Length: 448
Image (cartoon, rainbow, N blue to C red; front, side, top):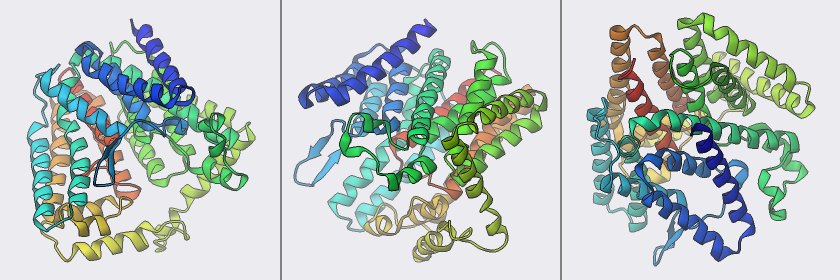
């Protein structure tokens, strides 16, 4: 049954590629609309399959799924995107046919977080924001609800099967990334001459491309956690493989915040289980040795090292990291200067917020949106999770619990250095990953 799930998952993925690039437009749209309908009508025992499958589509490996169905809102020159339709259908299905009624331990802080987001929506409306801004705010608010509804659509019996499919998704995403590095172009270039990459752009594509980085990071954290516990039904060497390739993938992206995040998570893992840390390091070293024998990958590894080493300039007082980082020297001051005008509640979902927000500086944009009150609620949510993880360790003495603490710390590092993760407005992909991370932690903490 486990292999059948994986074969079915990959088969549907390949059929979706065929539908996206070889079917006439009408049949293509009917196919992808059919996927949404199939998800809504499917039996609850298949929810994990559909959730992870749509997560893979949203991650858009190789830009294979750029042109998916959408709904135009007449009169407003706006549209509802395919992944947003999936989020709406998931919420509707969770309301109509919840598969899980078990109370999650983080329900109180989550409801407070969502309630404050509603307050920020009303604040935006009260400031006289345009109807376009209101619709945009609703668009970003709906995915936030996935943190509440994912635990209601994913039964406990589906957690391990869902993790298996997340690992398969990570392998697909990494394969697409390696294709970019080796061939200097996106996979979609095979199907569309319009998107073949010029020689000028090839270095950039190979240097910074990564698909579904949050899925890859989640795979890294969960595989490290599963290595430390028994009776998961997942092969130990397979988990080592997932740890190694996901870490290598993030390193190859040459994105400093993500690299630091992975390093911190792995250091935390090593501190509590140094014996089991040896095998992932050895396996990753073997992969690295093999990789450097491929010239284009060797060049990418060198570039990643160069990018990572620029962090030393910050410690020397250069906030631009040698001219490669604008977040601290430009983006952060711009957002904060606006935040100081309304520091208590921020600007909510107003026209001014959207004008001055910057997703590259997470904490500053969170302050601009929700003010000090909103930031305090965010900190309360994070501290609540960390304290609960630690209290679970004190009861069970299971060191594996710390992987959730370090996983959360890794997300905070990315949020503070590279892109916004925690906010009162979310993309669908981010909301799904956070929903899965918190729900998985709830599931495992109740079983340690």
